[in-house]
Image 1 (spheres, rainbow, N blue to C red):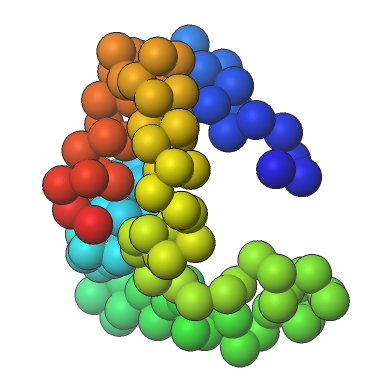
Image 2 (image 1 turned 180 degrees about the vertical axis):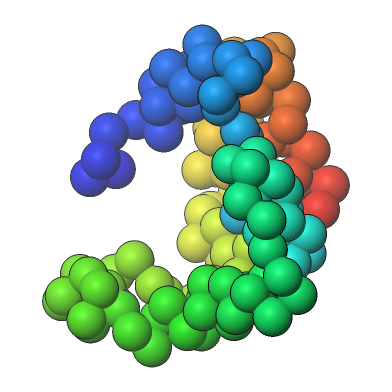
Length: 127
């Protein structure tokens, strides 16, 4: 991909996953329950949120809101970054062969790591 190998990126971050100043959260978690995700992030940073502030953050960080404002925040590149906002769309983009190759590479390089286990659960069990 344009930004480098996704599996190398995950391998690098796995080195830091247990550090106290690192919080891991997935897109799938936020899609499943954005309010809870925002609460967890606020708690991690020690930021108290009122219910009104929480709802404002949830609203403004929704995919629809970010996509609507993407031209202002990301310029012409916004249309590339903010496409559909769903989970599991890879199933519509990958061929069966590509999916098998990605699964094999994931299993070989990431699956046994703590971050890999968390991602596998989110990608395959929640999607």
